[in-house]
Length: 336
Ligand code: TRP
Image (cartoon, rainbow, N blue to C red; front, side, top):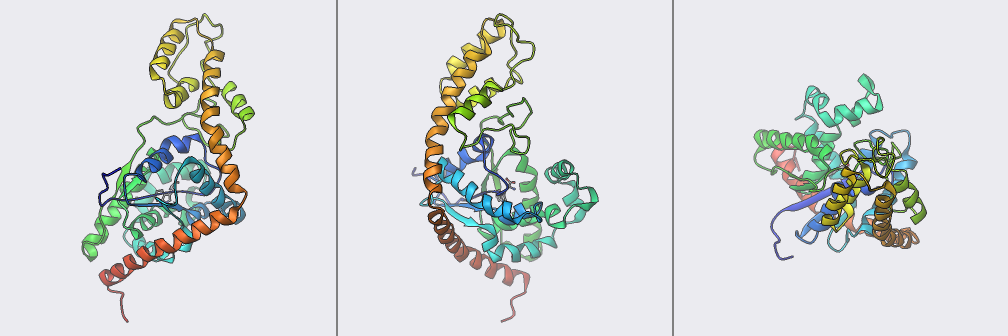
């Protein structure tokens, strides 16, 4: 609690859908920890970034601004400790993006592994929206407009932060030492798998558990989890690697010694999937139950959440305006 230093934390989500357990493990857990360790923490709803691949669907983005805020609040991100804001309401981010765009080449953006993967997934090819291709540049502006340098993210975001640091270096070398390099903070917990055994839980693959899932839905989802196709009878030896139930137990079971024993038993043979699944259902119901209740109670009056976002946005702008003053001086575009 007392180890506060000069680090400034910033994190955010694209409001393209409700968040799920994968997000919790990947970065939300870290956000919640960091807000007790650092004085300055920001949480940004990245609505403009969401629009880069949803230009034709503004309603979806708008709806999900509230949803992602609710998810984070329900999980314990505290507006008293973390300043919440909405990306599109900070004009300085847009200004800074325009300046940063000159410091990045098309070739470099196309080479960014995260952008490349996402482009492939969406089947864009050469018809990629320029805003989408350039989202690492606007992400640099999100982060640097608040002068943040500690960024809790999932591992898929590492190449983006690497590019942010290149922008920092280029800016400083062209215009003088204004920004400091950023440091990613990764989860210590391995990535959460999809219910179907895919490497990643995701909304678009429909293989994730959400924070407003009912106990019944959680139960169904866990019962449907992929385990080991060769583990047919209880007496058959079972595999741990690629087994979704064990991946979740590794993450959510506080009794890791018991998990270790269950793994041994499972590998020898004699332990059925249902026993494990029942154990996991209880753990997840106990974890998600209170989060879901808090989420529902907050959702009763969205105007309270909207006011909180407005207040945080105003607070953030005090800082971003200050940053832009320094930037305008440095770039020599201050005339009056
Ligand atoms: N790109 C992030 C994601 O897809 C969201 C994001 C936007 C973000 N701006 C950010 C994360 C700044 C950390 C810092 O999840």
